[in-house]
Length: 317
Ligand code: NAD
Ligand code: UDP
Image (cartoon, rainbow, N blue to C red; front, side, top):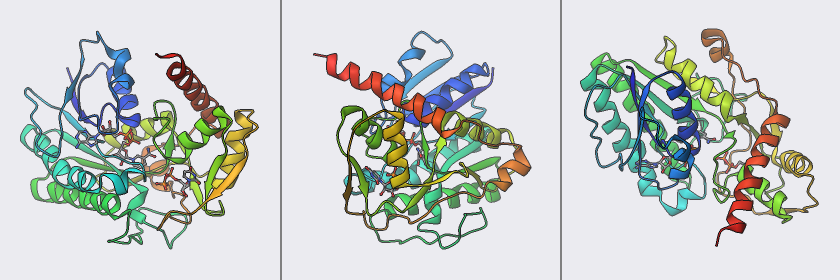
């Protein structure tokens, strides 16, 4: 049986990825220290004999006994609210954690996939961003712990590929959203959804003209698997072409939630990227991947999820 190791398995994306890998009939070992994830995201897998969650800080070392065919490295806090709170942990998991996970497939002859990020482009001066763009990152700013850790993670991955001839894959994930995000995660979709559902003001940072392109998690995970299965070690952007301003997004979420919330403007965080949209030609041409879930559907599913999560929190003693 094919056996995969997934770091960050209890997180938002990692938990969905585990579901899809199990659907393939694979055995999955999840590694997570639960710093930003939750075992609740995997509670539906209790009793699944092909799945196991091990509580492990992958920055300290990775021990997995038995054969391994694939290693998928998703462990890393990813919300800007985590950057000032735990910058050293973020740097460690991007560097030491990546190196530790790369050693597993090196010993086992397995394939390695790195969940990288659009943040490697920083505040981009090229728009939309193709994989060939090297980025515009502030190496000492408040986001640098994340951006530079992911750039180092990509460098580690390519070094292992070149030095050991390993099968490696790199996915540059653009902003993604969907079920199993934490309502208090601090990223824009959880914030707007929670605020709209509770009737609180939606907090738009800056003047709300900065843009993002938001990909629904089902499309993203299909993209991760397409890259994993594909032939190419060079990075792939995975995300949508639908670029929205944050003010437009606030209105979309408020309308989808049928909420009467006000919109309030708050200071723009330092180094907040002005615009972000992937050039996904490579993923389309090489892998035949394209996003399919329209934003209205993705938002409806996500709002439904947050509605039930918030309801549960209210009724718990
Ligand atoms: P998340 O916080 O929900 O998941 C990350 C998981 O990694 C959590 O379960 C956390 O507990 C775990 N983790 C963190 N440090 C760890 C460590 N040292 N050892 C073991 N486990 C550890 O975030 P997510 O949005 O699901 O992100 C998953 C991956 O995708 C991350 O690598 C992130 O950088 C990348 N990514 C996400 C997005 C997005 O929009 N969600 C965008 C770009 C890149
Ligand atoms: N943002 C916002 N209100 C919020 C949270 C975020 O306007 O309550 C903005 C943030 O300034 C950024 C965008 O939404 O411009 C996306 O932020 P997020 O933290 O989701 O991810 P980022 O792309 O910045 O890593």
